[in-house]
Length: 588
Image (cartoon, rainbow, N blue to C red):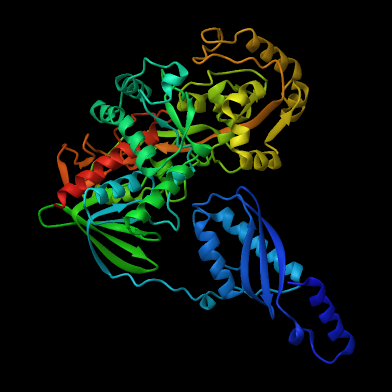
């Protein structure tokens, strides 16, 4: 578009008064900017006679999986209705708002007034879906466990469908750090770790859950972890960092594989690609409302709803529930654990609301350990999301209270850390690290969007010296210096006389320094459907419910009172594969 010629033509029309501007106006393209979840969203919008003709996204940093529906469906609806007065895409609220703001800004720059909301003007073209659908295996929940189950079932020869109630796939698997604990993995020898084992991993998990987990199930998880990780790497195509591992709290060895980008996007995007390659239908916005049982008590399908219409999905082999936990359902959380009340936000995806648990219970499954609900200690005080940038904690970052004092071992269990933070002045802490630690963790470089957003929010600061840190945090400078000086006298493994830091404190005498404010948020619900080591759902008296399998956070026997960091992905991949294989076999 030649902007100068367009302006000249409009000016000529005004001067001579022979034609109106509206009649003479040529299409015009202007840019606009909005604020998404991870930074600015910039678009170029083409208008013709006051109507939106096209929207091109020029710049954005949103999660590519969550934002897919935003840049496709919401974008199309804005064009069709010539309005931004539309509902946000559920699960991608901030990305939706960013796009709408950008379009509004472009319209303002073009001097064009958009239409008021008119949803009738949106012409949706949806593929007709039969009201009754027949499959060998029906998988409910398109997160890591669901994709693992569906892909495995497909490869076992089953005709499989994957249902997801949200507009976008991924759930908590997408937004997590996605580190995966695997004993005897291929990275450990590079770091000099040669004494790990599935048995030791199982012991750590059992102990970390206060010995309340089912040891048979735990052993299946830890002994199948390496095969599951190799499957993810070699078949699904997940890229893991080749020479680095996370050392999560509660573990006795450093064993957590780290996906490229340090988030579940690496897993979910590769899962989506593989499902598409295999021809597995993934139906979003399809909400399960009930499980179907036949006269013999076998689960044989799912009743579901989409856009007010009812659908039936029959399952010859059975149903795999991979619907996640209930951490985003504040009322349900408080019901089972009143201590986790209105003070807590959540790290969880909005679809983690737990209604599938009651459907499973109605079908005969026992719900166990429902009161065991984990909070994640290091989260954004404003939104509640995990501060992945503060994962520098696993490489030596310190947790300080408002008095500039350490108050807990930074690599302790998540529940221990969360309780310790809530006892501090204000119920928050500061996470502090320097470039000596940063060159190991690379979290600032890896999570640049978080760095920019948290800095802009005013909860994070980068400083050249401790005086700047003290000024920003309002911690007493003298005490801060005293704390850092003491830490510097105790560096190295086994030298922390105050809290016995299991990995060893790092020298923090030199900047640059990074600090971020953090609070605990509801993170993982350990309770759920009782399963056995074959991922089969069980009744209260331990009997198998034929045709019903469950995997991931929807289950309730693996983690006991407390899930150790890095065990979620191990859990979902291992048991997702087991459930998918078994359901496929049952269909034969």
